Length: 277
Image (cartoon, rainbow, N blue to C red; front, side, top):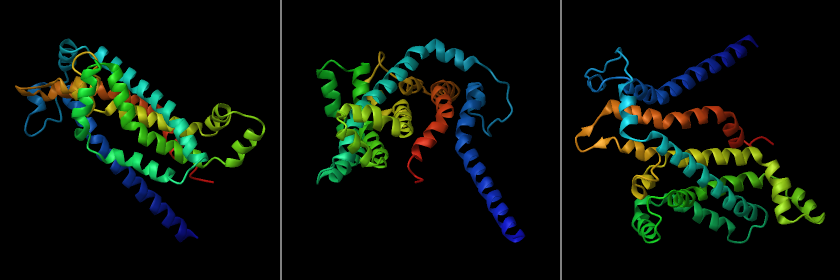
């Protein structure tokens, strides 16, 4: 028994060491960026890298003076939340139909939806750009919300479908026998039963929208650009100013990092929803 306990303790110790090592390796680029944002341009490109330096807020002052950070941040919030709401509004009925009223080709349809994520975005850039230009939606929040929705909808539908499949069909059948409409079944039964899964899907969709850069850079200019465009604006023909670029990146990722830390419990709970019966 003592030998078994020692073995279990050793396994837990090595798992803890491995977990902390992986966490530190993943966090190191963020830490390095944060340090560079408080350096001067000379210190940021010094060789060998400077670990000890005199911190300065000059980069943050220059970044805010050069670009309207609040406007870019507001665009990110509106576009991310707007796209997530639209994804859920379309994805919940679609996943409901696929989970509870499957047809012969339902699995094929779901696989086709997921396969669209394998298509390189640059392959459809020209037609989408021309559609936005001809419809007057170029450099507008509406265009970004629609494109983000189309980009994330396959993942949203698949996640919701997996959560809905875990709900016993008998519950909805009983409600139909009692005269509940489709809307009432979804609103009063399905959504409360799968709320953790829906929350994690919404959180993941928001994070994906916030971090999307390709469409933001190609479909926006000055009015609807989110924080990814804000970061890219600090790349100039004269070269990269690493300290200012790091400061801009720090300002851009801080809101979503704080949001992720605050909602990590809900995200993990939703992603593991239905894993244990």
